[in-house]
Image 1 (cartoon, rainbow, N blue to C red):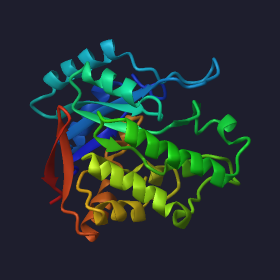
Image 2: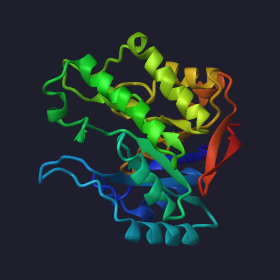
Image 3: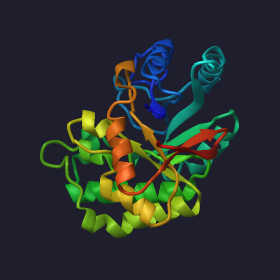
Length: 271
């Protein structure tokens, strides 16, 4: 049984065309009890005219999700969520924006460094792999320090997907151990969690974001809050590889995953 999927994109995201009703019907078909719709909101990003737009029209989005929540309430618990693309200078802006709406759940994700999306060649052009990774992890740390109205840190090390053949697919975890520890400790001190994002398996990295060692370290340091999300952009990817995520958590002694309502956390048994 899939308990919940807490990272789902619909046609409200610039990189998805998926219909919200199709998402809900697929979740019910799979026996998922709870989903969070978490469409993209990325501000202050340098993009070319033909690049995807990740600005989320909240005045249209929020009423739509609330209406959907009411319509499917007998069969599915739908959470009003958002994936906020945070940068170190956007924490206060994000806090004020989120307070205006009745959100249940917020993913804080670093997609952008120096106003450049990390999947853009412009971000990588003048950097070695280590220089790019230095900037990325430092951006996460500063963003966690400056942002408060969020629930979990999204796909913490997904930068390995990008950079071209000579730079992608490798993180020197020994090099970044202290910095990653600082990120995790700051999350824990603020009562925030991390997600297990299963899309790394679909993207041929054959792992979660973040990797097993970071997830283990979060719990070793005293963290308790964790969600599992497919990061699906089409309904057919809902709940993908969740059994693998449950098995991993049980193997390290974790018995609960987190649920959110109006940004308040509760816990549900994996079994």
